[in-house]
Length: 612
Image (cartoon, rainbow, N blue to C red; front, side, top):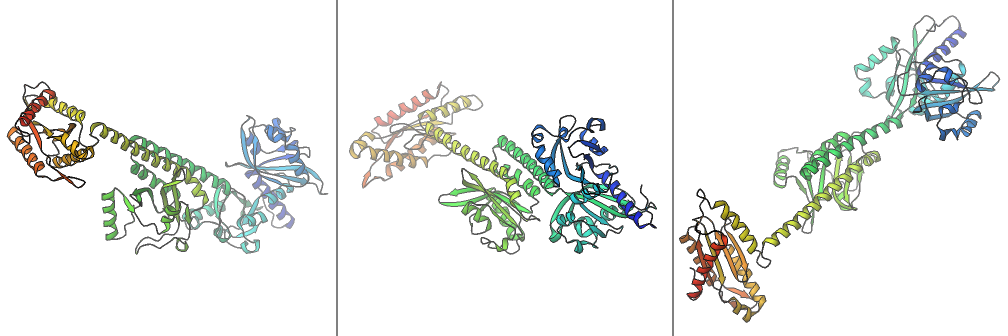
């Protein structure tokens, strides 16, 4: 503890200097070199930082703390120090165990009273709390004041001294800031909280406080410092001021936030990809992404949209959106859209987010009202104070977009850069879903084509007999008899004559018209198929033989009375049919169909245009 003799002006200065040295030694790792770069002395903080004992470092060259790459550049570095240049910044060094140590350090000349350089002082700070020991002399104080930001306060928190470095950091003129209260440099959420009064009470009670602090500079500019607040004692053992030593860590904090955001975004991406792989549900993946994005970017609301096309119209399908319904009408519209489309559909792109879609560009504005694309908001809609819209692309083609709005600090390039991996992932998911949908359509088409007649679109022979065979075997038991099921084979009369008279194109047209006409006469549970040429078959489920005969007879009459046309020709069409009721005597569907076929030929023997 240093005591201040208030009766001696010279002692005041000395005690003040000594108190400052004590404070500095508690806050920094300090090492002194001779002009050749050999270590002369150092403090415990420096030893703790690098893991050495004094015996292991004193007398050794500065290069002992450098990696091989930096050792090769040391001569140039040291010559600049000897020429009187102050070297400060972030440096990578090697500790006793060969591990990297990053320090914020300054290298400064130590001069004697004649101005001759007698050594070099190195000041180093890590990010942990430090206990500092006494500094050695006035030249160290001068070196620190030249390289660090220093500000002093009275016990009420008013600024009594500020050096040029702190003025540069905060943007204030020393005359303007001197006399102001410490609170002008702090965020209001801190100064208006009970913690702020507690902070100053701790200092007035002699507590040393160090750490990372957010501060406010001229014009409201935010910056971060690593600082130590040091109570200074007079000769009576009373605290008479607070001295703060600080250095700018704004870039470090910015990097930490960026790394955290990248980590959080990586987690969002991993979760979204995992969920998509499990259920292949793109809207669900969007829901999993939106809220974390809003939280991560401190945004008030937003949406994720996917481009869809209906004929020639471009739509923006919104599977995930913040519910902004602000009155009864918008709430009903929102609920109706969600229930009808499983999301919202936007068609109008003559607005702020529409510019993203129309021009395939990022739209970022912290003054939306003055943006050229802005058309305002509907009455009652929450005010948009800031907006960021990023297109989701696949091979440079826009496939969707992410929109977020109302971030308190606005949007800037760092936010955009951080979100781009997530945007790229969304592009991959949309593309994967599109490819899968296209593949499903192709597979469905192939399955349909394999099971259906190309000309009429009816099930083909293989499809009919496969399905009917399954029904035959599953219901051919006592508890599920097939007695009330009938099979009818239908054959267009004299179809060859139609082909020979009007041509095969006419024949194809008749087959399509015939198929469509009869399809409308059967139920969805019945199976109606084309089994070859002009021959058709139908399975009438849960239908007795008398009723089946009536149904097929009705079909015969409808066909007979129907006007079939091809080009300018009217073609007369009739058919013959045979109807067979299921019997347990049938061993398989083929036998059942053969029985229906025999009845068909009975109809033909009767002169055709008959049902038997």
